[in-house]
Image 1 (tube, rainbow, N blue to C red):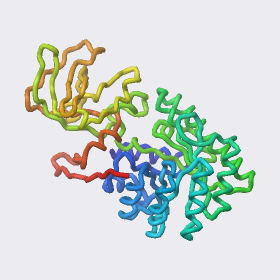
Image 2 (image 1 turned 30 degrees about the vertical axis):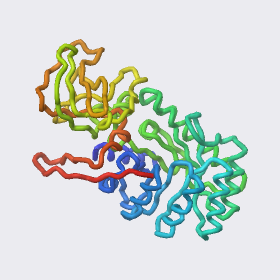
Image 3 (image 1 turned 135 degrees about the horizontal axis):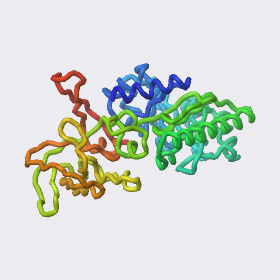
Length: 360
């Protein structure tokens, strides 16, 4: 985990931008202490529950990177009054009007970023959309604060390799630069230009004009990231410890006690060249066992089987043997659990527990 954190921190420094880590993957105060170099931010979250928990722990510069809904603005204002600068995200006039109205009513000029769409992945305005200037004016003239523009190149998850990720990083960069140029030409401020996804953050080569990058799953990584070559299997820092509870010898199956309640139902590798089922099997020390994966999952049962592409021998495991399963999606798998059992760097040192939280 620490190696993963250092790798992206160094890359951001080389590119001359600040790093605003996304804390949605870990949802854990102790993990955040390793990720946030300054201790109190900058940070990104995906729920107000995360913002409230991290703010209570002293993190005071937070971006809530999911489109704001008007019913949540009272909680946003409460966080500001408690000393946390929480920036919200929006992409339409209705949201901007709600943020401006809440700012006027509360006397708190809420900072808001406009989401920019660079690849048709999900939300946001294109840089040439006339609504961009309209939304900016509503914020700036209505009592709120136009804090900048933000882009998430989500389609970068669908391409493989550093070259492809670098291309998406440049598309992402150009989108926010073009949007900022349009806003400034209209006489509006655009102090922050924020980009990021784990693939583009690692693939970026030039972030001229950008002020910050965001990424989240890089702290743990997972099989989806390994499948698109954003990391190697050895970089994956999260696994689920499971125990062998039986066999179906005629089928070549080993049954373990990690079903989808432990692994989640996320099948993010199903569309990749190598389908890893519900997870990749390792020994209890975390070494990948060639040829084995979790073929299927019921609520509390996982079925370990030979991968159909593997022709070599596979080991047999007695009942009671312990194995580790690498997850498809670290965020989804971690969300199934209440705590992390943290393996220490020093051999023989005491294992510790870090609590994690959920909610919205």
